[in-house]
Length: 300
Ligand code: GLU
Ligand code: ZN
Image (cartoon, rainbow, N blue to C red):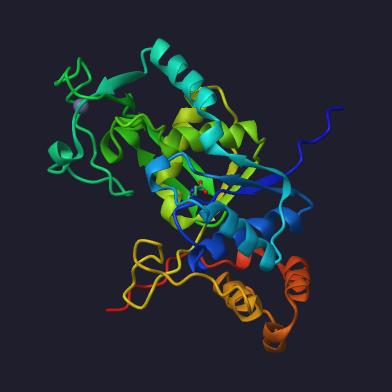
């Protein structure tokens, strides 16, 4: 009898700045879900977006994760060293007539409605040939009008019609960088990831990723999208909005707060305990079913 495939999760930070509370939520939730079920938890540095990568940020992220007691299995994968694999996938999609070059600029597309990730829903200008052959070319993936449905382990059923809600999306940018959507799909498959736990801001990217998995004959992992940490204005905590870096000297109370945010009930006295003890408690008591399903409400 074939051995059941081991449960394997991952954390995939972009080294565009220091870790903040929002990234800790994703790391902690993924770590606890994988390890409490006897699985592995792998690390991937998503430095595919070279212009946004900050030198030294990846090392700082790994150092802080270790301080927070979140140790990972195996070697760290760096997207910046994996271009040949992304190129091979692009070649395959292009060979199948599924990818095509596009020369539209972001500014030209700004008049169109936006997808959930803020990108413009592409109206298909270059589908039958690029409009400006003299310009650098991005590559877009052709999507169809089928609606794609998946069941998120926290948020429940989620459905999206790629044609109207995303449009043909970029898989390699005009500056030559491969897009997150393509890289993440190749890497999750190559790392043998069976379960993706991450921030809820990526829920609406998931149908694009599942679509790519289907086109490339790759397995679809299980998905679990965590609630998003917001600031007092209701904006997502992010490096762009200046979320403060995680406290490296005294991680306990922050770790305790992160457990509370994830709907767990750590005893109050645990917040002053050593990190290893907090993690031990969290692994023994972790319940994915207690993680809140709704985003915190915007406070006006
Ligand atoms: N690199 C992404 C980020 O830092 C996460 C991607 C993922 O988990 O799929 O937001
Ligand atoms: Zn175009």
